[in-house]
Length: 108
Image 1 (tube, rainbow, N blue to C red):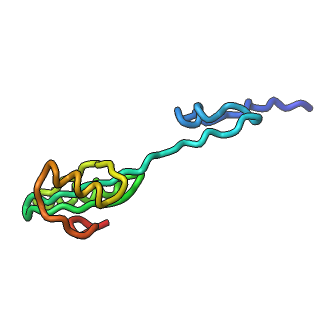
Image 2: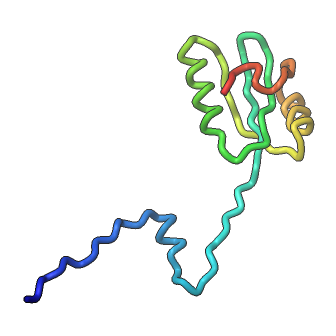
């Protein structure tokens, strides 16, 4: 007796999966994600911290939003630099404030 089989269902590909699906003979693409620094500033007490280097700032952004919801006037912005010291120096050329240790303004 023959039985009819259903065709195999494949999940739909995400854009990244589709881009990387090039066949068995090709080498997978490697993505280089450039690291950066994040400046966390606290306008209530005039301080800032340099966090990083990092390649993903989502947890820091979340921590800033939580602090803002608690009434704090904190913000974050990405910055580039070869080191945390370069990043702080660049920040101080444009803005004022006292630098504090990483993680002192908001915590992960």
